[in-house]
Length: 361
Image (cartoon, rainbow, N blue to C red):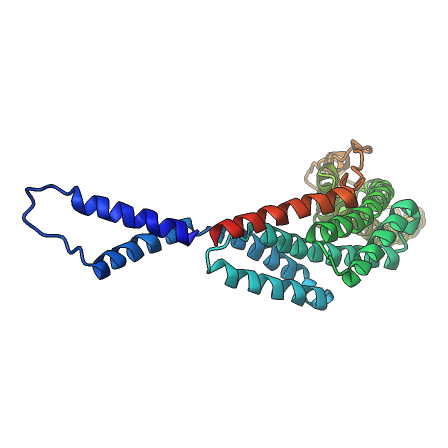
């Protein structure tokens, strides 16, 4: 391409020199060396203008790399991560020469995204197994395991593509997420039922009045569970419902224990009153008191205690509906792309990149 540009530029320079305004007193330097310098200057500017700008593609790839590191992929999949880094560094060096490397950069970006998804898939698989959740969606679990194995087997491929890596990693993680979503939705519904029952037990002993602070804390925990469930975050809702059930049960047991102690004291007080009444009746028979305003004895219409009023215990009960609106779990079905289409699309991208590189040379 340079062979074509140089003659054209020479012609342009000569044309410019000899058609300049005749009235200009300044004489142009038309020596061969001066013309050559001018041609080189113009050619350098043309080549600089023709350089590809890969800054946006590099930025996107760097962002994907950082996300993968945040997920822990640089430790969980160190070998694959280091391989992606090596390719990325080589491409950045090529970018300095002005080559259009957007296509290979996009492939590296997908590699980092794939390693992030792979790391999350491993974490979700571990959570499913440790919490014995496989039975909630065994088919999705098996499909996730199969995709995980396929992803790991890709590392031995000589024609490894970032697009295919991402496809398999997303499949594995998506299937494991299916299991978790179904499991925690069911667990949250069951936990809410138990928490509501614990609330009713607390209401039965008037805990909203007898232990207002503790009761309110449990009610707020329950409401947080409802808020998360409404946002389809079943796992978080499940945790809140468990805490609400525990707190309602604790406050109900504490109030019941105190009521039992109070009832026992009342019974003992009644027994003492009855014993005192029997003693007074016997004394009155043996030596009755006569007359009015006897010292130490109040008149019949004396007010001993001031009247007091209390809010009804029912008004202190938290307003929580027994049922909550349900939602449908959105399942990850997988990518529509097949291996053949993935290879075809990537091959076309590489071909375009090669052609643009050839033209730049």
